Figure 1 (cartoon, rainbow, N blue to C red):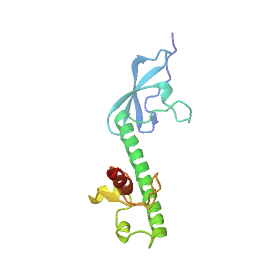
Figure 2 (figure 1 turned 45 degrees about the vertical axis):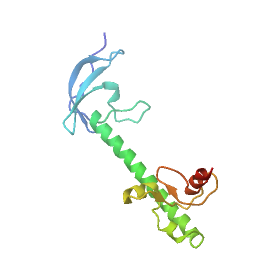
Figure 3 (figure 1 turned 60 degrees about the vertical axis):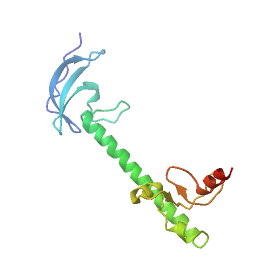
Figure 4 (figure 1 turned 135 degrees about the vertical axis):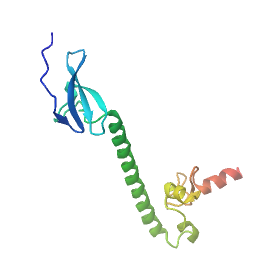
Length: 153
């Protein structure tokens, strides 16, 4: 028979505060604890996932809804960073192509995301396609020169 778990009531782990012992036990005999998140939701957490230490097993520090929200926010921040990098590279590429490409290409949006924001269908990053063409792209397509060649064939 497993020993009695140490009392964790009142301890905080991230956004969770332990409020009571659960009746549930893991197959190894570890206790589960009911925890209250700062958002007001409860979550049942195994005692071996409640820790302040960095380790290979993931510590649980929030309810499922808050964890999903934090995950979505992290992905959104990552996507925003990547989009900013794409726009910066496009500006750099365009500066090198000034006078070498038609002026109207340089007036197009920098990336597909910017084109969507502006309600346009074409954009120009200043990069070559896989076949070596330097031309604008369509949002849901590819290089315009490739598309023109495919229509002719």
